[in-house]
Length: 432
Image 1 (cartoon, one colour):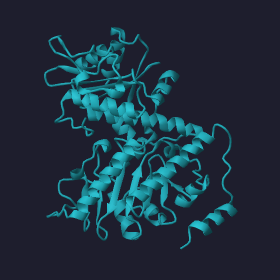
Image 2 (cartoon, one colour; image 1 turned 135 degrees about the vertical axis):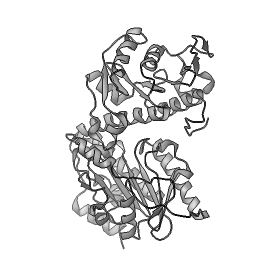
Image 3 (cartoon, one colour; image 1 turned 30 degrees about the horizontal axis):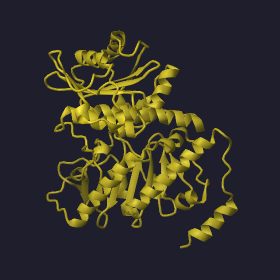
Image 4 (cartoon, helix red, strand yellow; image 1 turned 90 degrees about the vertical axis):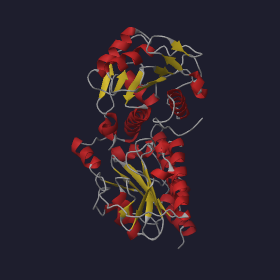
């Protein structure tokens, strides 16, 4: 099955099977749980089946609920079909629906509260305001009515009391981004509470983030020599790997690689990271962008880092769940946990939200070979390195360290490697 979601050209049954497989592999649903649907231009609803293994779903398993009331398929449709139908009937702007029981959102569901999406820079924009539907029997018309009532209020995402979540989108890619971002926001809040008290962005902060679109002039001519194309493939490979490893997700994450001198390649803005393809990557040459493409909101930051630091040849900016626990709380991210963590990362600093914005010198002045990573509050982790694989390794080490610290919080206080032991590591492994 194709691993790249293309909602314009893929048949609805292929879209549903692909996204369900993706959700299952990410641990966001179970073998029996969750359902996905797409409504097509004829009003036919293509929905995942009932009682079929979600971990091995195939396009031919998807059921078509025809607009005329007939059913096509080898399986019974999902028992939750009534609320899918109810949402489509009252929200013609919604063309795809995802319902599942991802653990973090279920935590909010059973606590009967809603995650505050102002926890992260892009989450409010992607998710919108969140609705709340009171409990009703699964598969019942009453549940469909309760959920539909929330969608009539304009919500695109709803927490279902003691059940899970349901999200809608203009297509399945839009719905999946909303679903994944909402679950990530919930996880960030929960993990943050393990190490401190989460803080939230003001709406003005979110608006300032959204306004950070680069205004680089366009090139008149573009060349794609072999070394440039090779770097495009490298970026795609690492972005997809990061998504699979849970180190990046559909609505957030930027990678750039230096090409020649201070020219570089960078991922675009507002794209699905899971589905990135080589021709979507943006070339930046002589301060100009590839025509017809909009590079990442942080393009100016990458540009300045490459200008100031010839030793840095790749940059990853992302949100990973355990590192974000420290980002949103301001809790100390002490990497003096095990030798590997300190050797690779040394001491990681945390900067205020906005330090990543255009014209701010904070990050370019801070990062260097001996300080390859920095946390930005309520936004991201930025990691730098020589080769892209090395930078990705630094990111993995940082996330593993953060995960250990979050887990450690439940059993006691972390006891760091001593200053004397750090100096011993410095002399043994960081010789110039």
